[in-house]
Length: 142
Length: 158
Image (cartoon, rainbow over all chains, first blue to last red; front, side, top):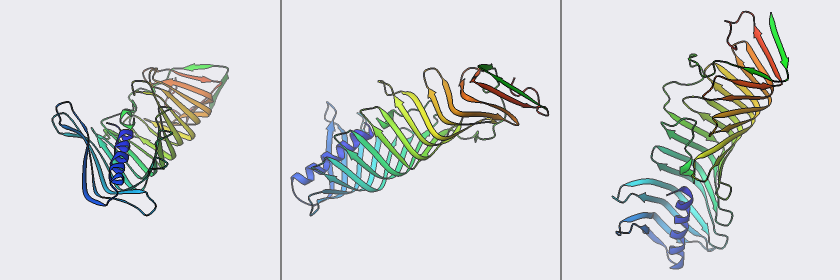
C-alpha cells in the first residue's frame, strides 16, 4: 500500500464518520480485506468528528497496512487531519510519519488533493532509506 | 606551474570510482537520508519533487541543491533524478558544483550542466557540461578546461 492510498483511506474514514454525522472516539475502520477475510487495511483514530464548517477532523490517526498473515508492513501516522469533503482535500499542519520496510518518511503537515492526485508534505521532510544507496527506491512514495 | 587545456571536447579517464579515501562521506553510513523543506508527490506525472534546502546523504555520495525531482518509470523504479539550483556533490575526495545535475538510472550516467566544476585536491576540471558514469572511469567534458597543479600528486586527473 502506498502513501497515496493511505491518504485515500483516511478520506474514506473521514467520510464514514461524516456520513453518520457524529463524533466518535477510538474509531476503528477496516477498509480492505484479503480474499480469506483477513484485514488488509485498517484505519484507526482516537477521535473523529464533524466541525461547524462541515469539515471532518480526525485526530490520533493511524493507518495500518497488513500482510496476509496479519503482520503490519506499513504504518501511516498523523496527529490531526482535516478533510474538506466538498473540495476532496485532506489537510494537516501536524507531524506525519510513514514507515515501511526500512523506509521512513517524516514531515510536518501535508495536503492531499484528490482531483490533481498530489500529496505535498509541507515542511521538515526527511526520508530515510535503510541499506539503500543512490539507486533510490522511491516506490514507497507511489 | 599550471597546465591549461581548453578544447572542444575533452575525454578524460579519472579514478572517480577508485579507492580514494572517504572524506565527504561517513563510510559507516548504511542508509540514505534525504531532507528538504517540502516534498510533493505528483501521481499523474510520476514524480517526487523535493524543494528547498535539499540534502542527500548516501553511502556513496552527498549532495545539496535547491530542488530535486525524481521521475519514476512504469514499474515504479527510479528513471531519473534531476537536481537544480546551487548543486553541490561530494564523492570521495571529489567535489562537483553546477547549476543542474541529471542522473539517468538506467545508464548510470550523471550529467552536470551550467558552470560545471569538478575539483579534486587542487586540480580542477570545468566546462558547460560534464558527464560521468558510475560504473566507468570516464569523464566527458565540453568545452573542456583542465587545471592541474604542479605540486599535485600526479596524476590525480589523468
